[in-house]
Length: 450
Image (cartoon, rainbow, N blue to C red; front, side, top):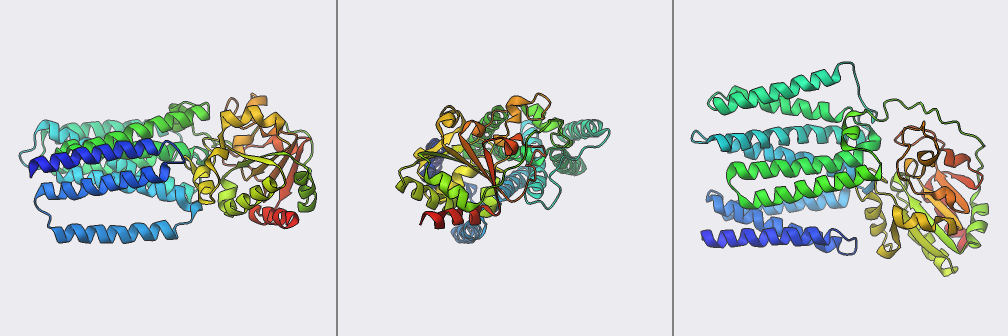
C-alpha cells in the first residue's frame, strides 16, 4: 500500500507539471487546468488514505460538497469579479496551510518540524489577511488608494521583530502555546499592514505575489506533515507565482520593492501639462470611419470587463472582417485587475488566440493601424509614460495606441484610471472620445454595420 501511495504521488506531481506547461498557452490553458485539477484530486484522495484516519464516505462527501461549491462559484461569479475571487482563493489557500501547520504540532515534534510549522503559520496567516485586503480593494468595499501614515515602516519593523522573537520562543518552548498564538496574531496583522500601502493600480502584481505566498505556505506545511506531494505542489505554485510577479513588474518598469513600499497612487496630482481639447464622436460618425478602415486594433481594459462587452466586441470584429478589415487585439500584461484578465474575457467570447497580440508584438504594427479602439483601458495606453518625465508612470511600457492614424476611446466619462493621473491621449489630434457604456456604444456600431 505504501508503494502504491508513493507512486500515486509521483503521478500527481507529473500531472501538476504537465498542467502547468499547458497553462503557458491560451490554446491549451483549459486542458492544462483540467489536468492540474485531476492531479490535485488524486493527490488529496491519496493523502487522506495515507493518513489512515479518514474513511471513504468522508472522502466522497468532501468531493461532493467541494464540487457543488466550486460549480456554483464558477457559474455565479461574474467575470468582472474574477480578480476578487482569485484573491479569495489565495487567501483561503493560505488559511488552509496555517491550519495544517498548526495541526502538525505534537509533543514529539523536533526543531525542524517546529520551524516549518512557524513558516506555514506565518506565511499562511499573512497571505490570508493580505488577500482579504486585496479582495476589499478590488471589490471597492474599501478604498483602493494606498493607506500611508507617519511611522508606518517603524510599525512594520516592530511587527517583524516581534514575529521573529515569538517564533524563536515557540521553537524553544513548544509546550507554551501562547508563543504560537502570538505568531498567528502578528502574522494576521502583518498581512493587513503589508497590503494596505499598495494602491489599486498595483493589485494585479499583488494577486500574483499572494499566489506565490500561498504556494510557499503550502510547501512549508508539506514539510511540517512530511507530505511530499504538498511540498511539490507548493513549490510549483510558489515558483510560478514569483516568476509571474517579476514579469508583471517588468511590464510596469518597476521593481517589486517599489510596488510593495512606494505607496504608488497615494498622491494623485500629476504635474503633466495637457494641451488640446477633447473631441467627442457619435456612433454614426465612428461607423463611417470604421467602415473605411482596412486595419483595426482593439485594446481592451478593465472598462470592457465592467461593461461585460467582450461578446459584442467579438460581434464587431466579425463584421469588420466581413467588410475586408484585418482585426487584432493588443493585450497589455497588467491590463485589468489580475494577470491574464483580458485574455480570459476574450477567450470567453471565443476570440481566436492568434489575434491576441502582446504589447511587444502590437506596438511595431500600430503605425499601420487605421483605427485603434481603446475599450476602458487608461494607464496602459497613457503616452505620458513615454513623453513626460514628471509623470508617476514615466518609463512604464505602454501600448502606443496614439501612433495609430485614428484612435477611438470608449469611456463613460473623463475619469482617470487606477493610477489617478491625467491621460494626454484623450486630447491628441487623432483621438476621438466615444462616451457612454462600452457595450451600448459597440452595440450601436454593430447595428450600423448590419
